[in-house]
Amino acid sequence: MATEKQNIYRQVYNASDDINILADIARVTCVLNRRSMLAAAFSPANELLSVHFVGYNRERAVWDLDFFEQLFSQEPLLADRTKVTKVFFFTATQLTVPDELYDQDEAMQWLKQLQFIDANDAVKEHYQKEDKAHYLYSIPLNIEALVKINCVNAAILPLAAYQFASNHTRGVRVHCFLTNDQACVSLYHFGTLLWHRIFEYRWAEDIAYEIRLVCEEHKINGDKITIACNTVSAAEYSVANALSQYFSAITTGTGHTISSIWSPTLSLIKQLESCA
Image 1 (cartoon, rainbow, N blue to C red):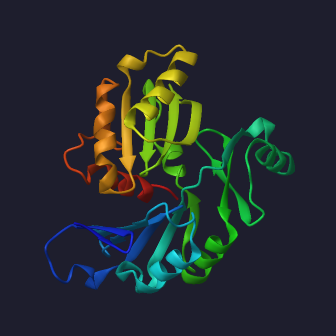
Image 2 (image 1 turned 90 degrees about the vertical axis):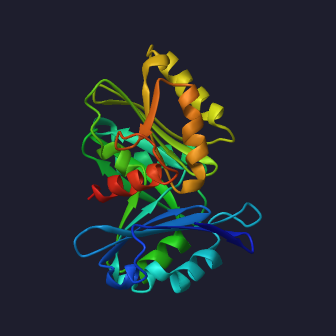
């Protein structure tokens, strides 16, 4: 179900038709993006109960504090915010540094030289155990503070952590995460991370071009790769589906057929649950 009110877009997925489905929420996982939030609620038995997505259009600035404050006060899945156990941030400013090159101060300087870091942003670090590398990313200080105040029991992680935690040992693996205007793509070759990038797109062909280009640079046959694609909401289903004309196959991030508009989002949620 999708609704629109005052340029605010909402989508709801319920695992069942039970009108009391939200009466027994044990924990909640959230994904915060520059113009949206995804929340997934689970039962005490770790069964997915409901997924709520709320976003706004480009008329409002990115990371609008009022928008996120209202979500934390009005979103039904966040009625008991102590039950929020994980909050994933999706931000485009990022840098991956191998262990042997990592020095915290130097890495911070590299990130600031390569990408714009706002004075009101905090730079965070996430260790990629599988890749033996450090992932630096920035998040707005005021949004981070809002999360820490409201979600005192939540671990804060970068959204890309789920791609790094996936099994990449079998051949060439391309993992793709989509919002309505950004793509997060990781390319693995027999367990080695070759490329990771977050970029803006308008059409599926923009994403295909970037993947094809990096495959050509690494002498990988782009015609034969499978794209494992997740989405932040059901709205990106058409983009994920359109990628199939450029590659041999498109699956969800968990390797299953995209059988419904919610399949790539439910796959994302399942993979986020595997992140520590």
